[in-house]
Amino acid sequence: MKGILEEFHENYSNKINVQMVDVWKQSDMAEKYSIRVVPTLIFLDSKGEELFRNEGVMSMKQLENKWEELGYSLQERN
Image (cartoon, rainbow, N blue to C red; front, side, top):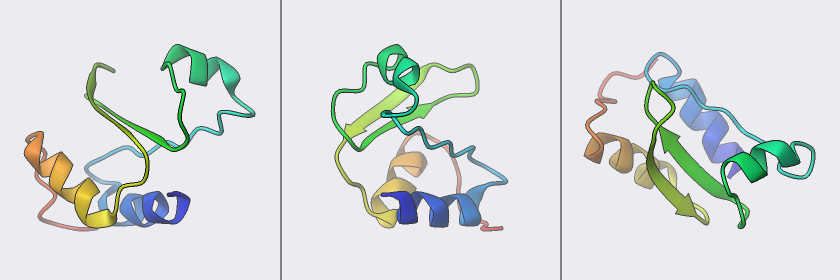
């Protein structure tokens, strides 16, 4: 997932803020977001409210499609 998220960040950093958390080193974050499976992807809005959660791997296309489905236009890449 790390490589896919890094590519997603490179392509869409002007539209979506991507943050990766190492749950082994940042167990407080794992607890805060109730992460029980690695990888877990949590999509938050600008207020920090959870929009979507996925446990398991997502492809680049699935990430793009989900953000579009949630109403975030990703048409223009960086």
